[in-house]
Amino acid sequence: MKRILVVSDLHLGSNVAICLPEEYDTDNNQSYTANEISRFYFDKWCEMRNLGHFDMVVVNGDVVDGSNPKSSGIGTYTSDIHSQAVMAAKLLKMIDADEFLFTDGSAYHTGRFKGGISGDHLTCDLIGGKWLGLWDNFTVEGINLHVQHHGAVSSTPYGRCTPQQKTALLMKAQDTPSDIYIHSHTHKFVFSGNSTNLTIGTPCWKGIDDFIGKMHQEIPDNGYIIIDVENNDYTWKYHIFGVPFTFYKKGMLKF
Image (tube, rainbow, N blue to C red):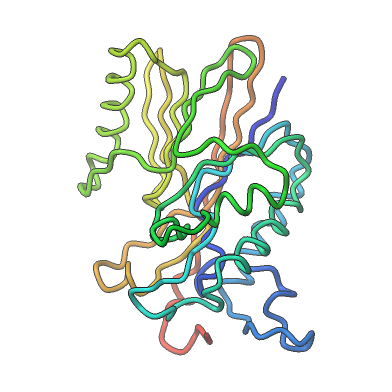
């Protein structure tokens, strides 16, 4: 049996995302300031890490938050992509796993739009992971998986699974079907399926930032996915948690 952990959208560097405590501990001469959300996410990360050994970890894009150039770095505790990648590598190394597989995230966050190395790719290199690029198909114990950070998205809450099944049908029509489709990017957990496939939109590790907050106040879904594969069969489960909304009240976050 192979045990697979799927995480995505860590957004290291964001004020409303996970961070290692020592990276923002001013008592240790660090320049980062602790806030409630960062501590909350780190505690949840430790709970996940304590679940034991994984044969494979799929890190499905947007590991780093990037420099946030449209806001001149506002909303990040560090806008340096290299520093973000180093912190992401430290977090991922906490997980007991045989192999890490990475897909590339959004150009705005990873830094590719400036012609530089992707922050996600840099994180992969720092921990000796396997780089899959924008997407890939691979087989584990006879089960075919398709992983990609970006996926078709519907802004209609009750129609969010429709683009997932559209992708599955298109790939089947092209003779490239998979048993499990994993997409991320939206920060909303949705899934659909039938007797031939399972499609998953993964949860994230980031709260409401200014970009989301000015459009709507829908709280992101946070968490991770575990897939157990054995002899051409699989089971899966999701772990979902939400940041307490009180953290978003005025004065609660200290950036």
